[in-house]
Amino acid sequence: MRIETDSMGTVEVPSDHYWGAQTQRSIDNFDIGRPTFVWGRPMIKALGVLKKAAAQANGELDQLATDKVKLVVQAADEVIAGRWDGEFPLVVFQTGSGTQSNMNANEVIANRAIELAGGGMGSKTIHPNDDVNCGQSSNDTFPTAMHIAIVDELNVSLYPAVQALRDTLASKADEFAGVVMVGRTHLQDATPVLLGQVLGGYVAQLDFALAGIRAADDAARELAIGGTAVGTGLNTHADFGVKTAAHISGEMGLEFRQASNLFAAMSAHDALVQVSSALRVLAVACMKIANDVRWYASGPRNGIGELRIPENEPGSSIMPGKVNPTQAEAMTMVATKVFGNDATVGFAGSQGNFQLNVFKPVMAWCCLESIQLLADACRMFDAHCAQGIEPNLPVIQAHLDGNLMLVTALTPHVGYDKAAAIAKAADKGGLTLKAAALASGEVTEAEFDKWVNPQEMTHPA
Image 1 (tube, helix red, strand yellow):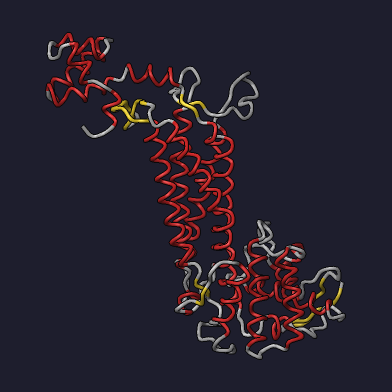
Image 2 (image 1 turned 135 degrees about the vertical axis):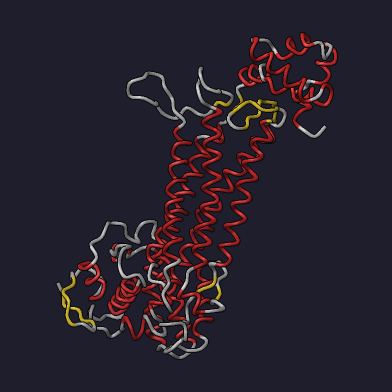
């Protein structure tokens, strides 16, 4: 162990770790659950990017000596690269401002910078507060890191996965554009649709969800940096926030900007509430798509059975040969978790008091978890289900032939009431629709064959 100090006194810290006194206090005081920001490492990377950008900005503004800037940047680059992930042990459930995670980053980067300069860890020749945290407060750095991490994960992880699934479904819609099948409303038979139209509906849902997420993504690119403690910018250079945001943009290859109102950026996190709600819309679409697919593929002998999906693994430990729609099940479970995360984010976002919201870590964690779960689920559903979807043409045709709602095509010719009577007679008598229609005397065989054309019923008359 070695002795580190902070404003409250001395603390014993493991000598083989780079963290310092405040990180150790958090480890000791917040043994609540085991989720940490190492999960997916987006927050650690974001904190490293932020500290690097802050040092660069402070150097340009003559707020930090050039030699210190170089060392802090080098240490931060190592954090960004993932070299020191094991030095970030803190759980999500800590102080609501994220102060301890901010100080964790400050301490690790400061001690590593000291080591790079040939000094002894804990000596504070590069100070975690005065140097690494120069011109900053946890109240503006942690929400800045939250936004960096979330925007990065949206662009790197989520968009490619959802776009790939969307493109697969669009390709399938084109491939099966001419397949006529029974439409269903209220879980009851309805007029015909094309399989291409059904799949195209899923594509439109994903496009809508992506558009909403991209709009929320843009709003989340406004950063709180430069507000320091309460939004006034006390103890920082007037140009620090703008310059730091510019350096963050350069590092990430994504455009970020200082928030137009720093008070709102620190006391409320409406942008993350918007991101979370947009992710919920995507989860709703995924739930709909996955449920439809597993219903269409139900059976194989005694369900709907109109689609065939890949058989990926055995489905039962007792029933030989059983195969289940497991990708659809995984997707729907992910959707329920995203719904729960969104409820947490929404409630947490409503709890800002005066100049600070103190639910930041849980908001970041829930948003990041939802992004990663949706990205993984879409990627797996695409690879192991959507790409293998095929129509079961004999079943589709048999169901279409027995669909009593084809009678709707007779309505313009015989009227609603007579058409309804024909359908009911067919149902009660166990007749085909054609047989019941001819028995009614309302139509001839030639008229029935001309008017009741399922393909022609899939578009406006």
